[in-house]
Length: 289
Image (cartoon, rainbow, N blue to C red; front, side, top):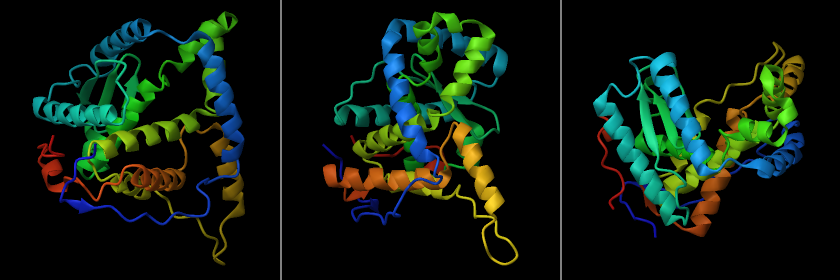
């Protein structure tokens, strides 16, 4: 069931570029991503293991990495919890039962960042809320993305690799696995984008905002004085993309457009909630439940 909201019309399909890959090397990453999933499935952590690891990491983050900065702003934290609650309801409406009791944390730090760790902990930084996200619909896609990482077992991937290959233990083995996985972890970002868009859509949000979120981050190509794009920078971009852990912003905007169009075909939503004015005040109105 989709909740129909008279806020922002989002019924027409968005125009889609011919190809979403920003780099030629994107295509080479896909088989590696499939291999990654196969290897990790050999020794997946059970939920209790993930929960214990996550609780230990949370203590490290809140006491050592960000002492005095985690969850000290009650107003911001209450807002994030309400948006998370709606995103989780959207997941359930899409037929996905959360694997964990999720806990979201506000980090009072100007860094533009959000991340997730095993066991259901999601972190959102003040810098992200103030410098990038512009409304509640965009925030719902971000939170859904981080929840997606956890549901898809991405934060526990390194540990699952080390469990599958005990001979890779130690700092050197850990770094080797971390570097190798950077070759295809960008595909996991796209999977998490898809997950977040679905959860936000089924929660009643206007997920075209998930497209606009990444469109705002697209850099203009560097031009030579004669107007041609700098080919050296093209080559350097391809090389950098090979080891990049995150896809290009243009590709993410494109794929999110695909996700939106597919969602509209699957479960049409003629009006979705955006929540720009209330977002500025950090007050949740959101979809009516």
